[in-house]
Length: 314
Length: 110
Image (cartoon, rainbow over all chains, first blue to last red; front, side, top):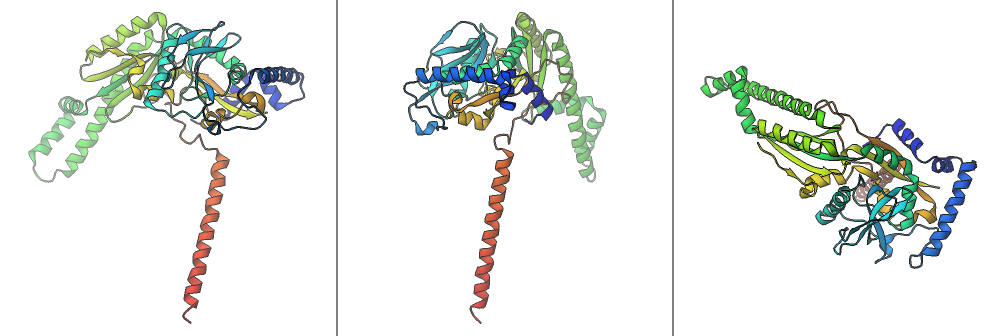
């Protein structure tokens, strides 16, 4: 997704100011004090790290078979260390625990230090951990496949993006995402419009009468059917969205996938309105007997959070 | 049609639809290099490129911006340009070589 540069600038402005200052103007006071903090972190790291080779050069993990990194699942607010049990990613599920910076915590587990394939097992494990943590915490989900080399790198991540994480955690406090996809049986929908739409039913009779050439009539019929299906599903979707409005905080419409899907939406719901939303979805679904509803959740608020991070050389 | 709610993790498609490019996203190449870079010692640092939350209620289909996948984000623009230039050079070398061969062939019988 390409973002307008203005939003990028705005975003950078929201990052912790000392970090920004340091990269832009190394001579400022803020940068100096920040640099001192960095050196402290470095020396501490040097003392703690015994096995992992360190140095000023980039090392590629592929050359260090068997080394371990930390896979990050999500960011939560938690002042004290937490454990979520052996539910982590990998064939031999590792213990899921937290890494802290002030009030922020990254939920992590040890993982081989290599680029992780998005296999079924890995992707589902990522989601499983998020769902487990979500039961008692507000989470900002990490996209799949982020592994850091050391615990200190994760502290560094939390520190650099502390402001953005804190801001988003506040906004997502006690909110859950639910997914709602609506599918339509095309053949059945066509039968419906043939009955309801006068022009379409007349053309259909003309064509089935087989008097003379039907080419033009067929073309016209096809166009009318498509337009009727389109406007009908738009009407359904608008109506359904309208009925879910007062039980939701926000909604996001994604592109429908495939021919039969007419709506692919995500809803952000307050935890205390969850049962109201649930009841509303079920009552809507029971009234639209020609539509199929795929209703999923609760999810971490993937569709309502978008934090983009990049790496910058000092 | 009656509907039952299913837990998030039960549909791989729904999971993939979310976890690959939503939430906190780190550039693909950064993700690959994080594995090798020791952030603290090489003084590379993570910065927030953008941070947005969507707290609006969509009116209807078509009015909301759809969430799209960053299809070509993984390859930097300069990288593509460089590759382009290299391929062009290769093409001209190939064409020149072919022309030379043709010239030799046409000259040989005479």
